[in-house]
Length: 286
Image 1 (cartoon, one colour):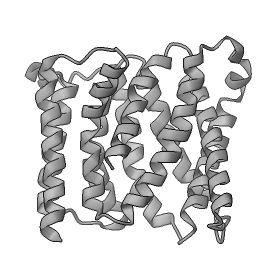
Image 2: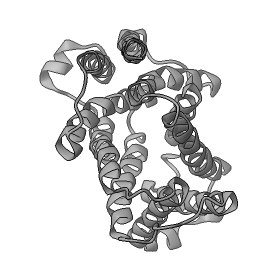
Image 3: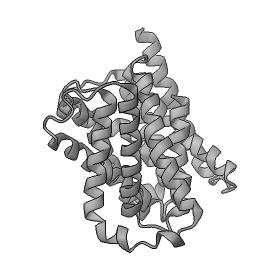
């Protein structure tokens, strides 16, 4: 799960690097298509089967629509927001997921988990408002963070809705179907822009980011998450979301993008505390 957090974190600084060159919808349409092809290849090569996968295909489009909203708003937000601030918004997902989880499938959150979510949320808000109480009181959020917040709402609804709509299909083929539906949705929506994009004039970094987000940030992280989910309680799996901002800072250092101002570091520290609280919760329960 540490690898999962590190690989997901890479999407934020990489996404910021390609923002000026390619439309987010176009990038994600191609990314979904590449990821779907790779996932189908893995599913078929592994022999896990496709039994029942093609029943009620509307489910994949409902789930893919949420997925597409999340990724498009992420890359759109990165045009103006700092990667660390975006990652901080991402750490609000456990709290949002807990709300949608209760509404959709009546999942109940433990007290310690609720405390961890509140602490992580406060840490996220500290980073988003750059440690300035006046900005918090005026609720002044940057445009990039505002856009991405809508995507995080979609992402938070995705998990409980996935649990509700899944009918026991093979995991790889089920995920490949969702990615295929996402490629269709974005491909139809952005068909003209895709055709009119001057792909030959794109800098190499655009193709590198497409490859990274499709294969690594989507395909590899799904396999890691599936592996961890089968071996760890959900509380511990969810906990690692909170470490993403720390890994974003590491990525920025590695890419020579500098580090965020010191004022946001207490917020990052609170997200790490949330991680420790959730892990301790699981250890006590076991």
